[in-house]
Structure formats: structure tokens, C-alpha cells
Length: 375
Image (tube, rainbow, N blue to C red; front, side, top):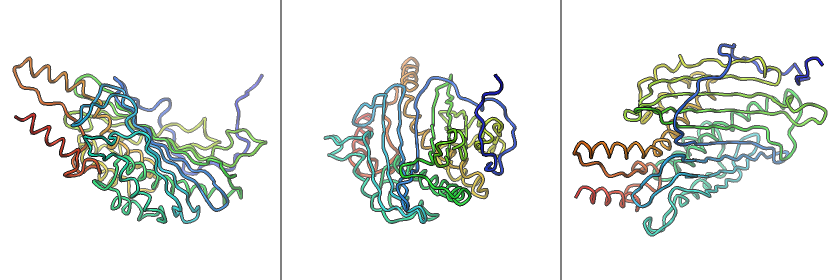
């Protein structure tokens, strides 16, 4: 019957500067008891001749145990589900409209929160309408919505969008100029997906995996196979082991590959771990972002890898909350040794977000609980 594998018909549009093959087969993986998964996605669609539409989503899925806070018990399941939609000028990346939706939040309005909830600061994001996704935007975003002014999860999502969208825009503009074609209204031409997974291992170790994929597609052509629409497919895989008590990197493996329609069968993973060996032994919290920028900012070719690494710490915070079983085990051990176990309570760091701002109702309830436990 011969070779019936689908092969691209266009061999002239190969991705330049593809990394040399170095790792065949699967990149490094993680193992253990599933604790938590964070999903972040960003996509771009053509919305008309002079408009793009972007959407970003963040979902946190707790897979293990429950978390006692100062006011509630948070069980496993969906903890956060939030989205940001943008109407964009394709040339300037000016945001002509911003919409925020938060179907699932960690803190709903209640008597304990004095009627406040995680949705309260969202209007501050909408006030950024008219700004452009340029080099100055992330500083403006942090000033407007960082720390006690906003929601840390929406902030992380918007930071990812502010990096991914300009990156995708540069690639799409170059493709359109090269091919002389444009996407039809409603056609999705870019999607970034990031997954952060945490697994409990034996002892005090946690496996953390980050998987990022960027897909860019060419306009639909009825006479060509769908595989020929692949403009580029960029992937990063990070597998790390973290000491849960020191919050330090015990091991770190990073793999990357970049393919196009003509190289799907050819390009293997490139091991990038050596460039980040200095992170071994350093803490995930605090200061990881600064160290990542120091290792990647001088190399534009590491932009996608940088974005993947920057999702590690925010995801790790969510993973840490799914480890209450370890706390209960340590309580039992303390009692067996005649010691008084600590009171189990988890929550946001003071000032980390609007709900955990200083002197807010949640912070006050947390302080009161600590005072009660100490008496």
C-alpha cells in the first residue's frame, strides 16, 4: 500500500532556527499522588478586518483533601475559574474592551467576609481599557491590580496574556506578510495552554510539572489537509522536585522543542536544564521570578521558556494548599510524642490580594483565630 502518512504539501515555510535534536522520546515526567492542577489558556481570534478578540482562562482544580481557612472549609474540586476577554486593535494591541468573569472564586460573600468576595476588585481591571499591550503594560497592571488592590489569579492570567499576545502578534504579522493571506472572522489562529501539576511523593518531596504549548495556525484552505495549517508548535516541559519544608528546588529538568508543518516528525526535544542549574537549591518562594528574569531576559529566543517558568511559583502556591493530609499526619506524630500540635489553618499571605489585605475581614478573622488558638 506504500507510505500513507499525511505529509504537508508546502515545504517552503519552514520555521527558522529550529533547535538541533538532542532528546528523542518523552521529556522528563513527574510521579506521585495527584494534588492539584492549574490550567491557564490564552487564545486569539480574528474578529473582523481591524479587530482581534483574545480570551484567557485560569482554572484551579484541587484533587486532594480539603483546606481549613479562618472562616470555612474548602473541599477538593474547582477552586478558581476566571476569564478575561479583550477586544484588540491588531496593529497597536490597544484594548478597546475588557470583560472579566469569575464563575468560581475561593471566597464568596458571606457574613464572615462582611459581604466582600473575590469578585470585588475586578472593575479595576476594566479601568485599563484603552491601554496597549506594550512593554510598559505589565508595570501598569501591577500598579493597578497588584497585591492588596486585586486578585492574584486574575493578575497571573493577565500577565500571561500580556506576554503571549504580543509574541503571537509578531508571528502572525510576519506570516500574513509572507503568505499574503488573512484569517476569516471567528478563526482562531493562536492558543497557548499551560498546565501546572503537583504530585506528592514519599517523604518531604513534591513533584511539580509545567507543560506549555503554543500553537499558531495558517488560514483555512479547503483543498489542503489540516496538518498544513500548522504554522508552528512550540512546547516547553518542566519537571521539578521541590522540598516541601524548604520550598527549595531539589531537581529541575527542562525540555523544549519548536516544530512546523514540515518538521512534525523530525524535531526532537532539546534539553535546556544546564542553563538553569543555578536554580537548584534556591527557594520557589520568594524571589523565583527575579531569578528567572536574570537568566532569560537577555535572550529573546527564551521568551516562551521564560513564560513557562514564571507560571511555576503561582501554581506551586495552589499545590501547597492541597497537602493538608501531611499536616494531619504530623499532628498525629506530635501527639504521639506528647507535643501540642499546631492549629490547622491555611490562607493567603497578608497583602497577597484584596481579600487578604491588611485589616480586611478575612485577615481580621485569621488574626482572631490565631489569638484564640494561643489561649
